[in-house]
Length: 371
Image (cartoon, rainbow, N blue to C red; front, side):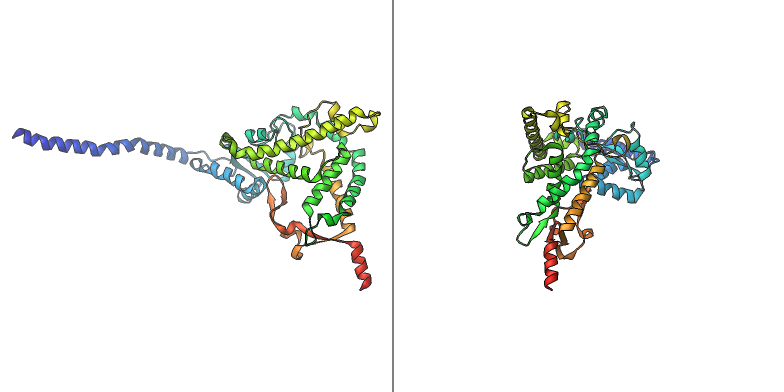
């Protein structure tokens, strides 16, 4: 009789204990959630405006926005929300975004501001980490190369550039029928790229090259640079993610090495070396790695090519507009062309408005006379 009474009691106690086990297991989870909430609510607000931390969601959202919109568009988005000086997170690190011109001038003018953000594995993938000037945090690596660029892109080189630009533009406009489609449209962006490449080659290198192939490789290289600049480190754990970008950088590097080797052979066979000393020759004899890139900005990191680039563009446009009348498709202006704002502000190449109608001005004069 006693055993019959105790058996139900034992069953009830076991049932109560088994039902209370899940409650005990959830207690650490509740404590953890409470601790995280306490950290969130007690987080010190930064004196610099910007998106909130929000238990780690803020850094993920801001980094994702930079990956999605590009550097320029994302900066403009946050500038409209938080002002000209604000803070975001890129790859988990706090990053200051400055758009005020006076502040930018101050930062770029002083040499002790040298840090540039960017994914280290991404820059390594395209051969730019600690090997270039742009997005390089080691100024001593590029200070020895800067005088060569400064000398080549100013003075006599600047004067020669005008005549070379005019000749190159005329040479590309003469066989214009080869550049047109069935509708007699010209891809203006590719035309300008080939003129710039031909001009730079004649001024600095002087080696015959395939303009179409080199322009395509340069474009693919910059696409890879833009794609890898802000990628998180986990992206580079799997080679199939970045393999095509690595190939784009390798293709351009091999083409440049081939051209430089041709330049070396040309210098080795020349009789009067002094007459052939140009920008590329000085770099070769100085044994300076050709993988360095030009700086940009103001002051110590001011772009040494900004003046010659402005002269080149003016010479090309004046020659182009003197010889041809240009009309966009459907009569739309340049303001209607979609643009991307990532590493730079440039037209979106996946839309047809880059193809324009080039009409020689001589034919316009004949038509006017007939009328």
